[in-house]
Length: 502
Image (tube, rainbow, N blue to C red; front, side, top):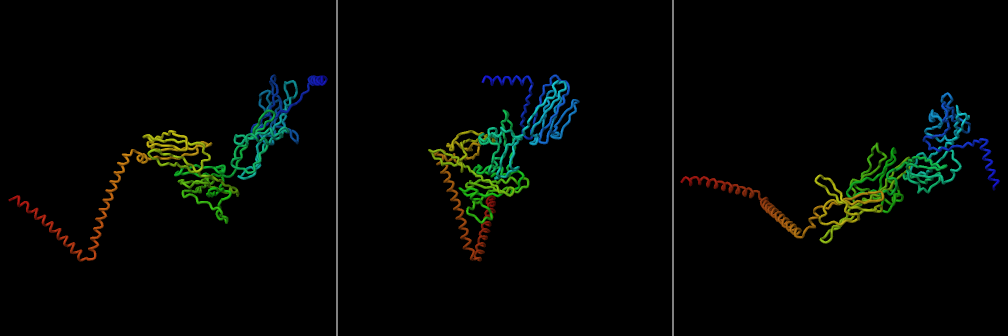
């Protein structure tokens, strides 16, 4: 053991005396499309002249000049990288090479040679291995349902990267599968909109981490991105059923409604189909299909002008994208406030009811009041599904319901003044009721008198109509009587002044 140690010591002394120089290769890993910096630093603090240097790239066909500079200061650029390469400037000691918008074919070994002018030690050489990293997809543009593979490629790939412990994946900034996936590729049997976004691969290599990101676009229905999306709407309000295709696509979407308890895969209804085992219910009366606008052919969202009780349930939007059928199923959830009748001993109880409350985590009741300037003031009053009110609680009450995504929706209930009058004091109720009965009785009596007079006139005309001559005699007698009455009045008026004169 002692002799082995002495052997290593002697070997180190020999190497030191002979001046053996062991060249090391610097490793640089860069993302495709970024700027790569190949370092070449030479201690040249005492030199005041330009040093001649040269950058070459080694390949299967030999070496290719990237750029070089003579002692005179003239710089030459090769055709390997073209204008994407930046040769070192006039800073002494730093001869690093900059490559813009690095490509996969730029990967390989580069050699920097600096010929000292005044250095006194000949030519200094630096070797740099440039590795280019990128994220690629097996399909340039995927359609919903395609089979896809996401790959993390390092060119040239070092042997130690065959270990799966060197890779980390993120999708839209979130660790893929909880950072539990460590392979260099990810197979996706059926791509969906949930796979859309920025895929980032991180490689840990020789103590340094390098990341590469690529955006995956999935053609189809982008909103809603997944099936069974819930759309909340209050009874009596209007709402939008979203169905937005990838921008730029032209698809004539069709809307249908599913029966309760069925799915789009088992009960989807097509016009002209011979099989109609599960015909869907009809669309609501206030259902408005998307307009045919040439500027927004990809937005096939539908509208309900007024949501009614019974409109809740599943709806299906379907269309064709490059000869492939894509569809999205969404559920309309209706919300309303139920009120229990109040009595003298029991207050009014409001209940916030949803047709589907599986996403709801909490409720909140607020009271909305308005001042003279119509400025609303919101006051929280409860956090339960139900709310009890008293006889003085007239006004506007709003039930808000929340989920993991935040506020899902709200529904409003108006407690009118009539409700407060009905729940007033007993003597006020009896007084109002008595006045109402008396007024209603007088109205009925007036109507009966008018009806009786109309009936009498009708009977009189009915007796006279069969005898036209009698009708003339009656009219003549009536006219004669009227003339006599007028004559008697005139005689009476003329006799009064004579009496005054006498």
